[in-house]
Length: 123
Picture 1 (tube, rainbow, N blue to C red):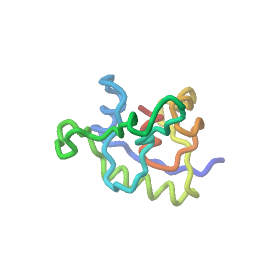
Picture 2 (cartoon, rainbow, N blue to C red; picture 1 turned 120 degrees about the vertical axis):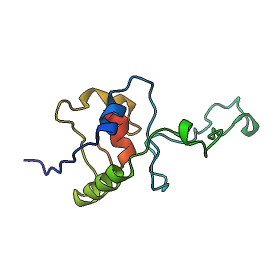
Picture 3 (cartoon, helix red, strand yellow; picture 1 turned 90 degrees about the vertical axis):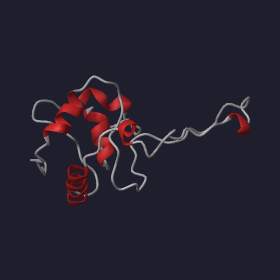
Picture 4 (spheres, rainbow, N blue to C red; picture 1 turned 90 degrees about the horizontal axis):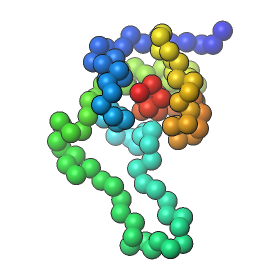
């Protein structure tokens, strides 16, 4: 069988997963660049010049209300589990597995190496 570590999900996290308010990810507590989505896009169009590129930045990073939810305890536990399982995991909820969400993952697979990648697939 596959090595498995179960994590009880706090009710606010379950509500976040079930919310239809749009696709956004929770803030990560580590700030170590483990984002599931790239923060910048490489310019490949020859017609675009460097000055045409604008890096998207949060307008007000200090505004907690607009920054989204945060689940630091769950994130810490999940990161420890990822390390204990060899650095990569397949996320699954007891009521579903995100088999049809590989298209949204930046690597095109269900192989996750960070908390935010897991949340992206489950959300």
